[in-house]
Amino acid sequence: MPAAGHRRHSGAAARTQFNLGRALPFLILAMTVLADLLTPDTERFERLLVAAPALAAVTWSVRGTVGIGLLAMAVRALLSLSRNEAVVPELLTSEVVLAAVTGAAAWVSSVRTRYERDLREVTAVAEVVQRVVLRPLPDRLGRFDLHLLYLAAAAKARIGGDFYEAVRVPGAVRVMLGDVQGKGLGAVETASVLLGAFRATVNDAPDLATLADRLDEGLARYGGWDPDSDAAERFATVVLVELPDDRDVALLLSCGHPAPLLQHGTEVEPVAFADPSVPVNLAGLAEHHHRIEEVPFGPGDRLLLYTDGVSETRDRTGTFYPLETRMRGWVREPATELPGLLHRDLAAYGGDGLDDDVAAVLVVRAPESG
Image 1 (cartoon, helix red, strand yellow):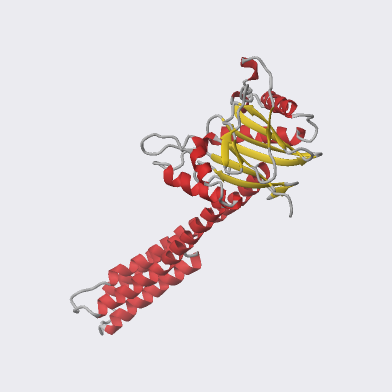
Image 2: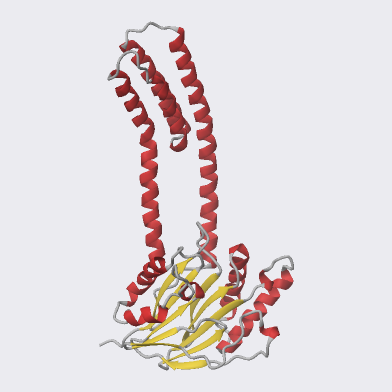
């Protein structure tokens, strides 16, 4: 996954920075000793030793910080001995200052390590919750391969207002991709409600129209349970796909969502929705009906579902990302490589970076064996 690769790269960079930070106190000690020994007796650099325990507090444990502070005090005493200096008030004053800085640095280190421990615990809980809400897609369901690109716009977030799910049901595979209006925790809450409604009804709903109605009902019911939440006030665009086992077709229903791209051979065209439904949670504002489109979907065909975080990425001139053109240029690329290609191309195309959630699911009908 591209997002996972990005996290691995960021983790390696963080470890390099962390190791450099741990070595910095010793570098200060070594440079101070060299500067003091290689300069005339009139020049003194031992006052710089206080930087060693101060810097140690940023990356070292309490014991490590105290140890570096004691080492700095020992270096200060050795420098005085190397100059044949007697124990004078100036030396004692320097040692007291170093001891005071070491004590303060140890306290800072204890506070930092406590916050880091709490943050690790909170992060671990959040990752479990996020994994439950937005589970990774399986690589394969039935005769269909699935490839996912998912990027949350919020810094450090794993989940945003875009959501997805794919489930094997009797006789078919059903896929959902959606995008909640707005950003932040409210959008995440709405996405989790819709995911819960989909999972609760996807096996029992006789068709996609019924499934779309259940999404509306689930969001309305949640608003009744929690009147203080703004989840029921938000709407979401959703595309639902059903892939039957016994027919080489794809059934699609769009609730105000961007049209998926269908690749057959080297041809790429958007799915034509003659009469798309209104977004989820806006059914009361217009005549309520659903029309399901049926398109051929044979061996080797590909179907790309995506959110507007992909299609509405702009370059520095304000031009929208040419997704359809890009997909035509990638028709011969392996399906496993397409999420990575799309991720890198979006990042390069966006003039100011990606400022919206991005989700794309590539569904591939596996070629017939032999």
